[in-house]
Image 1 (tube, rainbow, N blue to C red):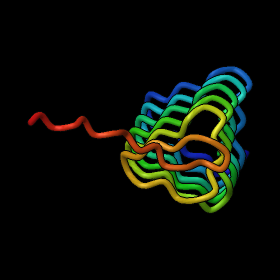
Image 2 (spheres, rainbow, N blue to C red):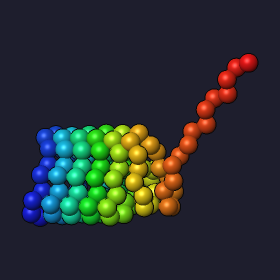
Image 3 (spheres, one colour):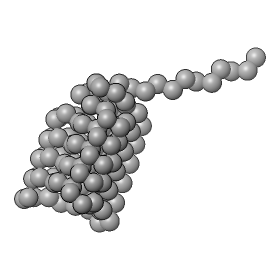
Length: 117
């Protein structure tokens, strides 16, 4: 499609779809059957697992990971270093370094270890 800019070191697996007006950073990896729709900006070292769906007008920060079959709604921002779990449906912005899972995607909160007495 028109106006797609892909950084150095990108790896596009078979059956990946990129539409128009997309900016992709260096060392991007799009796995089997994943797609990136119109007007998206994707940072450096981002991975889309098989079947990940990045709909239009989405920004994904550097070092993010989008799990297999995840769906990201239009207009969402995924922060740098964030992880979107397998099959998650993202309907809200994801903060940097966060992990979201489920449908709709919710923040995964890790329990802190109890302190010794």
